[in-house]
Length: 156
Image (cartoon, rainbow, N blue to C red):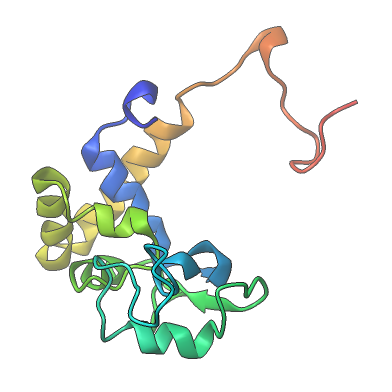
């Protein structure tokens, strides 16, 4: 999807950094902490997720069917736009499988590591550049698209 829209591996890692802000419902990642491969036992968790982090997540998400509880995506700084998310990813503590996938490719893993030790200003610039790039992909104009008067409602 990223490549088809003119985005590259760096853009993927940079935009994933948006997970530094906000929360997620347990239902978006509970498959990683409950019955990951279908064995049905309590040790059946995603092997790409830090085993020591699983009990913390299970305290918050009490069952695999929890659709109401929310968890901070970047505990400790979930209201701050910073690069701390990358530290969590490197420790295998990202909530989503897409976070874990950043470590499975040498190019994306290298960028994760650069964000941990690099200047925050570089991350801010890269994030802005990638957001603009993403915002320009697949733009519909004229009769092919519309600018909504209210973002959640199709114009009539």
